Image 1 (spheres, rainbow, N blue to C red):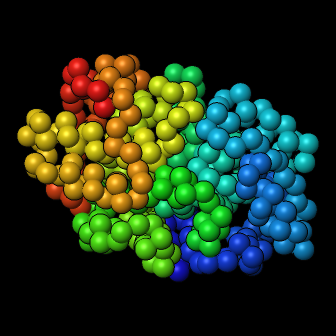
Image 2 (cartoon, rainbow, N blue to C red):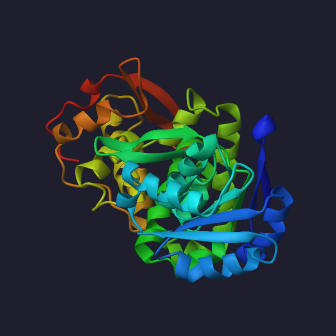
Image 3 (cartoon, one colour):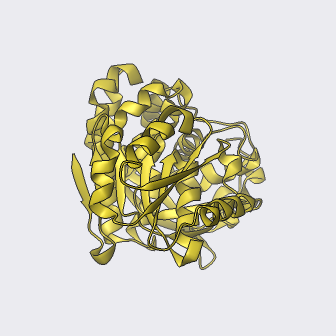
Length: 352
């Protein structure tokens, strides 16, 4: 499957195909005519896929690689000089290429390094987690975390190519497959009732798996269309942040060491819908529909943290514009809206 993100001079193709990683050279050579490639990956992904990718590309390019510790704690400002030094040591110039090979952490971190090194080096995203395949590898958001919050330093920097290989997901631990399903469910909630009902019709991820490539394509197509309308996240693109205001605060609360991103988003979607139902802003029963699908895919709906403990992080959320939190609420499953609110929306003694 080929999709194109149409952004004028910043347009790029997305290919979704089982075992496409084995043919990476074919696709990369179509968009890159330079000499050197820096592959940035982590210590879980590179040993499994990086060496073969590098060998494949060395038929035409001079290749280097950097292997980083896996996990969200790597995606911080202090890691950036490690990337810059490796790129300098390899002689990477503005006419060369960076490949982000990994999940969302590597995609965000390597993407921001590519955006900022020498004021911009061509970037290819090769996402290896379900979450990165359906969401973070597409759309050009790249960032690092600060101690005060998630993704607070970043840029909009579109890749030149995205290669999505669903077959690599066969090696993922169950928890990280479920993690990605949190974002898949989000797309159904905000934009696609038919997708939501399809997800609800299966009894487990294993049951759904034969249709996984199709579902990835469906999610990417939603993301593509939203990004084309709102590249810089000032309008419709904010809908993609359903559940994320709470999610980022939950992740930060445990220093990115307990709930994964997809787990936190799952909690955020359910809890924000419960709160909205209580304020008559979302139809009754919406949260229960979400809960049933979360349960099917082994995702949490609560984390045991008092809301009052999360509000400080939420005030620093990137969706906080003009002192308003732009919350994403559901009119119904498949239809969402932006709802400007103050932090008082979350003033409650509830434990989420």
